[in-house]
Every structure is written in structure tokens, then in C-alpha cells.
Amino acid sequence: MPRFRNSITMADGDTEMNRSEEEHAQNHEDGGDKNEPIELSGWLMKRSRHSHKWKKQWFHLIRTDLFYGDSEQNTPKKIPLVASEIAETNIDEKSNAFRIRPSDSKRVYYMYADDENTQHNWMQAICFAKAAGHTGDESQACTLQ
Image (cartoon, rainbow, N blue to C red; front, side):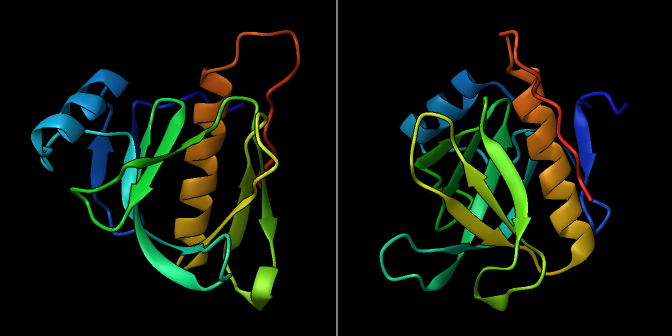
């Protein structure tokens, strides 16, 4: 079984490292530092909740939360990953799409990557983050196909 790694190699070969949620919050307060290490970051297409249009968003995976926004410097929105459900989907007939359903919400987030390898990297990293934040008795196992 794979172990949670402190770094994830992106499809283009770039590697990013961890940073704490406190550092992320501090960066939001003082404008951010894009050279700060993080677990995984990059562009994904995200489906709008209301209009169902697809919009390019920058994502930062930090510990057990997935932050996103319009740019590297602006990621104010957060998806909590602990006990969330993650699965591939074919919504809107998009290739390389997946969904996240946080446990404390009825909302479902839909995203897709440019290619299958990037999709797999994101889903694997989210799965590891989800498992790393688990403290209860229920299994947090992920199966990626």
C-alpha cells in the first residue's frame, strides 16, 4: 500500500513540498509567497455550482484541505478532504474528470485535468491527504483505477 509522501511529482516533472495550513493562512493575510513549498499545486478545470460552466482554477493541496481560486496568489476557497468521497466521473462527457464530496456537505465539486496522468496524480494526492487526516474507526482507504 502506498504511503503518504511529503512530495508529489507533477506530470511535467516539477516537485512541490509541504507547507502548513498556518503558513497558508498567513500568506492569505500578507499577500502570499508563491515560492513557498506545498504538497501539490496546479491548474484544473472546475465546474461552477450554479451555471455549470467550466472555469480554469488554481488548486493548492495542503495537508487535508484543497484550496482553490483564480490565481496562484488568490486561493480563498477551501474543500475539506477528511472523510470526503473522491471518484472518477464522466460528467458533461469530460475526459479525466473526478468529483469530491466532502462529508459535512451535500455539495459535490467536479474537476477535470488536461491528461490522465495529471488526473491520477491529483486523485492519488487527495486520497493520501484524506487518509492522513483520518482519526476515527472507519476506513479511509482509497482505490484509484
